[in-house]
Length: 442
Image (cartoon, rainbow, N blue to C red):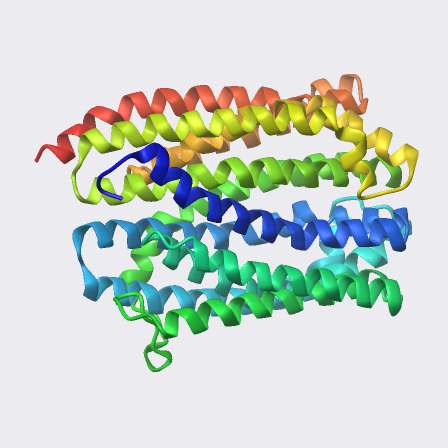
């Protein structure tokens, strides 16, 4: 990561990461597609309507895994083996404890949270049942994410991909068995997801236990080093808060979408799931750039940092533009994977026209945020997102949308907020670069 052709190296790093993220997204996509095809539109709406709520509950803790990645990458650049071992064992312990907390919280309060989101009564019980079972898999979910973050910090994106491939295949097979053959509806897709998460967690832990370097995990050392925990929290909490800020605004928007009925909900859920594929593809390059920048920042290689920033932005924009317009052009085909209903496909195309077509702007926004985190500035992207995403979206829903409550006027706030945040992130990078230069020239 500290030398060489970064166009080639970033692609080599990002491609397995991209496939890993796509496979993880396929867990949810498989749930939605199977219930939409074999259980009906109500079940499709029930499953798809829970994603924003899951993200709200989970993003803070997933952000901590980003902190693990950034800290470990920097320590690898510095050659600090003793502290790396502490990060490994503290990270896995945090994943287990936070996962148990989320399982209990989600199981107890699933229906209450859905009621707060004005989930229609005809799908409320189905949504709550799916959500309760889904949350039972949270310890495994977080263990995989933290373990994969550790492996990626040293450039290993292939093994997390292999593990998710195994888990993804199991998820699809179990979805078909439980829903198509056993007629288990949303219970079947939820159980399939939990089983696949357990498989991926087992594989990544087994991998770390067999490592031969400082990333090795010893079960006997399982526990929290409080000094290292504070360091992970210092970096990871702002990353998690940023994701939570987006999730809060999305929950508000999802609650508003719910008021349009189950058909609009189903179309919205299918289209937003497709947006996830663009996000994961472009975010892979953002995460690659973040890791590369983190190691070069630790090694104080300023020229490399500049080159990595340029290459990362170029990749993100190229992939984002190609996928945004490509998926929009073939929108009816992709939406048809999730539902046979013409009304649901029509509803999905409305969101694709207003949101997915401009998703490359979101890709740029997330890329600039990753660059800032790689440079060690984890709080600034969070503040920017809090003000310009959550604040602007909530204000829009409470004012402009209320004046003319049609679905187009709800969706359009997405690209508006992305443009605002991208501009602020770019200005922030310009502001912090002199400080980065001084750090590297010490």
